[in-house]
Image (cartoon, rainbow over all chains, first blue to last red):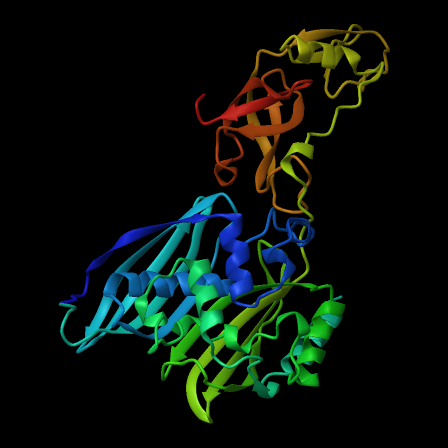
Length: 133
Length: 302
């Protein structure tokens, strides 16, 4: 697969269901109550439960490997969270190739939801020398 | 207060560079069931994570180090003290804000992980949308069979919750207090009329409604219906504290009516940060719920 600076990845739409938030929190062994208990989330100033950072991180990684294929190897994933992902929202991930050096690409990823920018991230990924057949 | 804050900041900073976890061990070796649960939850169908040559999704790195419901066993007293100080300062809530991971080699089922975490930095006190608090940044080195497999930098915000959110259905504007002295005003609002009191003796206009004339003390009055033109005499922007049914930030205007009296009201139709002194506004009546109508002032379109 030839990758050039400026390449845009097709957007990935993710429905933020209550199930995704809770399943992601438990699969990442994160039992903070704000990720599964709406009443506790409200007591801590949030209108509802919200997605944990490990799930967001995992979804950003998935977005990259979905696009570049199973032979792509993640080297670095850095994310910063903004507007939280609450149930009932939709997050749209978009990506743009910022740098290419030999077999390694740096992709800038953003994820926007209904209330703003949920995540900005940078992923460094090593791509197979020859594209998948 | 200032001294207390400075003192707390200094005490928090003292933890920079101290270990948070020493010789932590992953509670489970890297394993296919946890990988599968992760992939199911995230909808990740990457074939690299299944089959005999499966690797773990690299972004699972932190998951292998989590304490779960039983908590961490290798956490240092330094880290517990730091979190305890923040709890005592009212910063009882926590949210993660940043995660930076580097993957040096893939993790495979059977890998036994060990890890060490150091407290990299503690920020000064910051005001955020969630509440005021401190950012704590840690770095964790994760090893498989003693060999560095990945690093994980993590930033959390420990904060004092700014407010307790109520479900929206309970959020109703406060009711006006209607009494004998101001009943005529609220009766006017019901008819979409903004009524100003006028002294029948000295003819002075007065607002808000009062039993006697502020100029001559006369108790007799009649009313004048405001034409509805006005200007912003002054204003404030409310950021904090939040009240139910109000959505900060919003502008509260002191409106000077064409008749010369002033009243406090909302300025609508203009972003809160675009309201200006001298801005012309026009009276409108806005319904907030089935029983509450209030006079408000629209700017920007006059």
